[in-house]
Image (cartoon, rainbow, N blue to C red; front, side, top):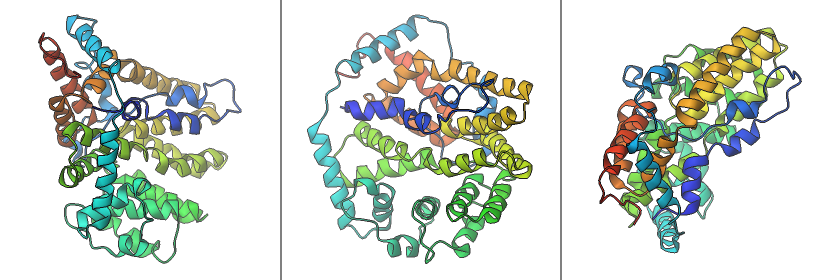
Length: 380
């Protein structure tokens, strides 16, 4: 059974980033960042193929099936979820199994096990061995995840022995058309005050075909790692994987957001940041990246007094909040999938196949069908 802490992370993961980005505005004619970024976590896809993905760009059409009048199936779904929330107990056994899992990873020499340990080092007992991370040869199945971790480490704790052009150039081979990697590289350059290099990386990212921060792929990888190295049930494995990946959501955007906020007077930089916002809005697969994209655009429109464009972005935000953030059926499904393995597997597999919006729609639809069975009691 999921703990209260896990369920809270699943449903309220963006709270920390709302506070982080809730900076006072010098222009009182526009709303604050808190109104812009108030949303909740939704998982994403791992497949980079844009044609297969329901992106936030077409969210209006994608959510038609997601949003429905308050009918019997929705009411039943919400009642079941409320009952589950009232019966959550923290599990000491689960914590012990998680600690045993980390120990198993530390003792293993396997490539996948080491990568899983690197990806969740905040729970590991020993610090990461940088030589092992940067010199490890990736397998074809995990090269993007290892490269993502290497770039993230350079952004968080720069070490010139490992963080250099040779590493950055690997993006051309790892996932060359993915804007996410170039924005990560831009963050690294900004951490070293290399503004011209950062702007070059941002420009490259702005012209890439898609944006995929591998969130669903990371969840799947960690869930499978738990399956191999622990005795946790599927739902506990999935909840733990979501917990692990959700704690890092948004961190990689902070440096870019700060930079763009401080460079609004520079027209060329402001334009690059505006284009980055458009890239994130149109091609992102996570709520937080989508909201960051809208925020970057509103920064520009507010500063340059483009009220009509600012209003258009606000309407998109209102639409998103109405269709997803404030959708009670979505939140009920998020709770139930923490208990029902069938819903959890639907959510994960649909997300891996076609992306976040498709995953949400499919899982809500399945949950509504299950809820009509009088014998359906997922949290008992």
